[in-house]
Image 1 (cartoon, rainbow, N blue to C red):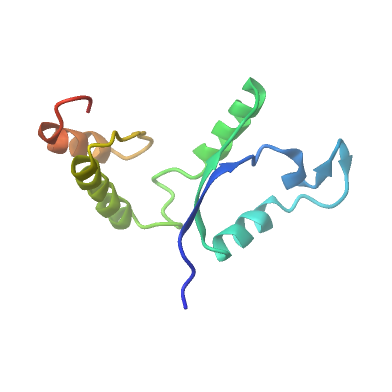
Image 2 (image 1 turned 180 degrees about the horizontal axis):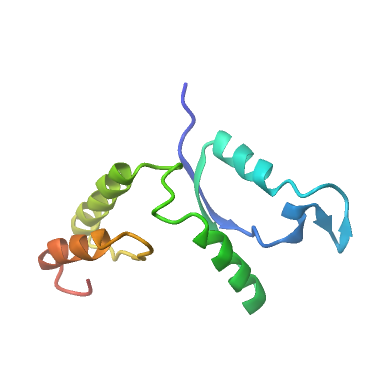
Length: 124
């Protein structure tokens, strides 16, 4: 039986505990990579990083930047495009807005927005 695909919608990966530090004291070696691997093995295929201050926002941004569109080892480009297309269908079907973000897509994002723009009368 395959695991369900999960999205962690509020993971605080900037917390030092993910690097082995608890309340300012190192309790074990940095195991961030292993934590991420365990999450993926448990079915977590996407994460939304939270932050409580500007410093943590910058750290979160740095972490997110490492998982760009051009790093395809988590999900092939074709799969990303397929499900991005599906997002337009769902938004149109439900009348709900889309929250869009582009990073290193080589123009695919802009082309797809332009292609689907006529389907929406507000936004896009």
